[in-house]
Image (tube, rainbow, N blue to C red; front, side, top):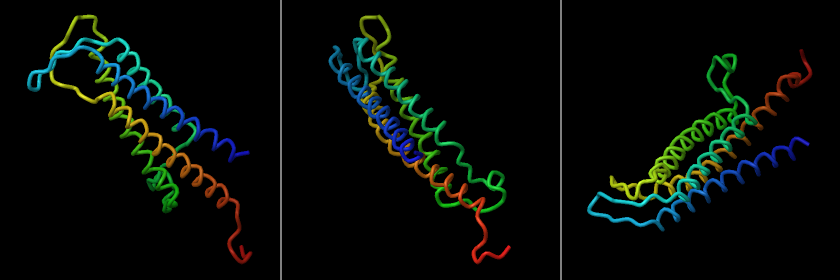
Amino acid sequence: MARVEAVVVCLLIVAMDVVAGVLGIHAEKAQSQGRHLKILFIECRQPVPQAYKLGIAAAAVLAASHAIANIVGGCSCTWPCCSGGRRSSPNRQMASFALVLTWMVLLVGLALLILGALPNSKKVMAECGVVRHRFLSIGGILCFVHAVFCLVYYVSANAAAREEGRGSGSKPAGGHT
């Protein structure tokens, strides 16, 4: 039953990250449909409300996917204070490494999605500023990267939890106590 639950959780996380990525890419497409004028590195763009909605939705789904992955993945601490002074297993180390990567990808992806969407929230006719090309699509692509690291994190955290559960109640080899 635990394997079925793990597969369902993995599929949910991947599906949410894929939806977030597709929303980010569609937000970029919607933004490119708006009118704009570019002179050197300054660009004037007409806000596109659809790009704003899609970008914010992508950010929200990415954040929700990250929250689910972290909640169901559990704690994967490899510091000596957490592991009772003993060396952490390779699965625990991989889970910790993947967890750090998921947080980094989340922060960059959310920042890009939000920075790409915000200029489209205004009701003014056009706003001029520094070019922000591809923020939404790069944020969308990072959603796919987030899915991969979340899967690595979840699978390795589950494997580490199974190792610890199996190792805590077992007798030493040979039957001697």
